[in-house]
Amino acid sequence: MPDNSSVQAKASPTSSLASAQETKRQRVRMIIRAAGMLPVLLILCIGFHFLSEGRFFTGQNLGIVLQQAAVNTVLAAGMTFVILTGGIDLSVGSILAAAAMAGLTLSKLPDLGSLWLPAAVLTGLGLGIINGALIALLRLPPFIVTLGSLTAVRGLARLMGADTTVFNPSIPFAFIGNASLPLIPGVISLPWLSVIALLVIFGSWLILRRTVLGVHIYAVGGNESAARLAGIKVWAVLIFVYGMSGLLAGLGGGMQAARLYAANGLQLGQSYELDAITAVILGGTSFVGGIGSIWGTLVGALIIAVLSNGLILIGVSDIWQYVIKGLVIIGAVALDRYRLQGSART
Image 1 (tube, rainbow, N blue to C red):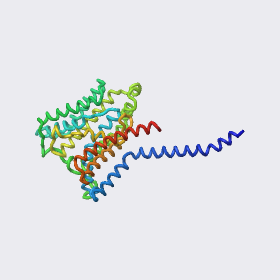
Image 2: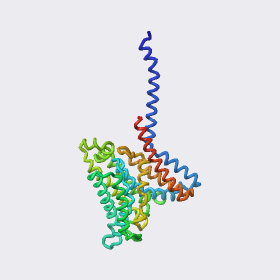
Image 3: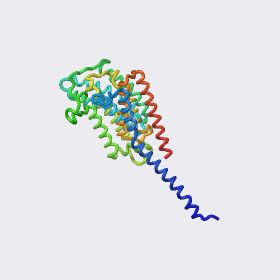
Image 4: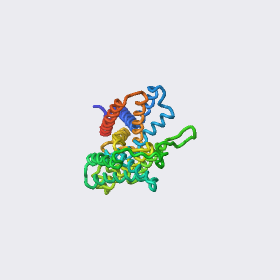
């Protein structure tokens, strides 16, 4: 009859090896999750640099990429708050247009012109709070509410300008849309739009990771019923996140108005919500809520900007750019589903 201790002694090296391999696999998974989509961003940059015959990594082009990413980064930051609670905001493009129209209209008034930017931001905040109140207090589905807002607010934006383009070539604070902040004078500068976007990302990170409110946002997204039982005012959290999404969409409208000196209620902001959602999902925030990072959202927004810029540099037509962007959106959702399945297995 074999001695149990000898059997255990023989089995222990095998079990130790299996345990070590599992630990190694877990470490690899953790590294992959921490890196997120950053390797993809780097590969895209290098790939487009070679495909464009060295035109990607130039100071002028990188400045263009940062400008292209700025507004979407701001919108995506607001969208991150919403998606972390398990919601969605399809109205941000329309809110951006309405805010830009409100700001530009006010900028043409002699006595109130300098208040156009706060007016744009407050317009976005007000519209976002209305979305949040309908969702939180009337218990209406976020998809339906914001889909309705997408159309209604777009109509409001068109009414503000009587369905025409509003111009103001002397709009105050236009420098934020077209000038750059010199980091090393004559060598390196950063577009003011990008400075604003980075400040928004940093502020969002502080709220989400350094405040009780941030903990509540993650809790509501993780399990709304449990959060309610724990004493969290879910309705207040929901109104806040949709208000934040609207506020940042309003800021995005102000950024676009400063960059273009003009706004059109019909055209401005079309499909911006899709780019914002794609950036959030690419950045690792889950559609089901409770999981995500604002820094990942920044990487996601940069991926979209690099993709758009790179495709133009290598001569891809507008038609194919839409096709590729659509595939990226589908891929982002598929990636989110894969991440959820991987989390369930581990």
